[in-house]
Length: 295
Image 1 (tube, rainbow, N blue to C red):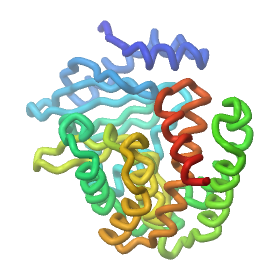
Image 2 (cartoon, one colour):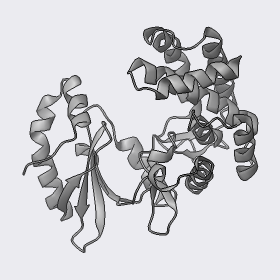
Image 3 (cartoon, rainbow, N blue to C red):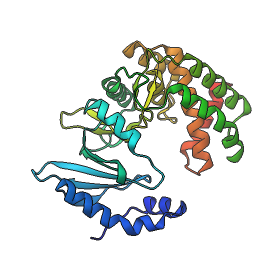
């Protein structure tokens, strides 16, 4: 079979030296289609870490086939989707981790394209996050928020240098201080399942008119980790981020200081990373906001 592989997926695979995977991919898709009795359709554009195809189950149910590129371990995402069981996230219909493949519920358009008002989006993202959160103990094979904070703290200074110091040293220091506090605040006894990268393109319309999340990173962490990504969203909106933080705290009962500190972390780390790969104007907008808040 022939496949229309999105350019960004192709570029990612070739840049990583895994071009042979592209040659093998049609056979993998064909094999998975036979295993799950799928009719395959068009591909989805926009991502770079997976081939995502429209498929139809034998009973006519629309679904999505997702195959991670080499080096992308899709197992962590599968753990999150299994635990969520369709609440807050797309429902997992099948998995083949040996071939890095997931069969998923097909959802509708992204929130970014269907909800014009950013403040309304923030509320809807918060609702989806709350539906996903559930207690998870140390026996669940997911990294913790403390581990994420540790990894970010190790990477941020070098990434900042590599990106050409795109924000002030004070902004980096502020993020590192927040990372230290969030690392120390982690408590396995109160950790919940969090998505890890909530934003308007990762929330798709569900059949009930609400929204479900896709592409979870998956962590055992404090809920503020997810709410901090909502504080990071829309860096060009110009609203009062302290007020946005307080509103999220009021809606969820989560500590406002923890939300603010995770928001700082996500803003600076995402901004520096975006600048390092030339993802603009997003990187510059995030860091301009971070510098303003630090001052």
